[in-house]
Image (cartoon, rainbow, N blue to C red; front, side, top):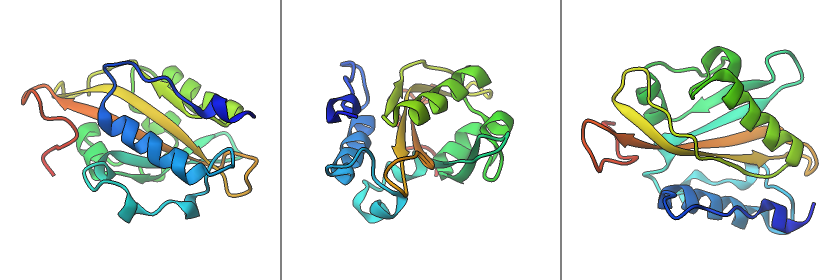
Length: 166
């Protein structure tokens, strides 16, 4: 895969937090298609982003994608913690089909996916502006984990992005 397939074009409305995480991922790629989980150091990621980051395992069974780690802000917005559940069981988005199509695209292309489809949490308080999916690989060939980052807006407190009631 040519390195330009890893380059995303961000719309002007894209949150700077989303771009910052993407740039961190790109830096960790080096000359590889994608970094491994071991390449990531949470202390190098801006602390305000960590609560909105999840890591999903790519598994070789009917579950397909399983939440390994779910950030505290993500849990707050969802209203529950899906850690250990499959994306089919615990997805968060407009539909399970939309969620699975993003994960499937990351695995097939071994490249990041920006999903600009906004949606509102079931409690009506939070809306996402975008979601980015970033592939990880332990062997440099197959995607075995995916970083997911949601940029949230608190609709009850306009202007409150990512900095949720933690």
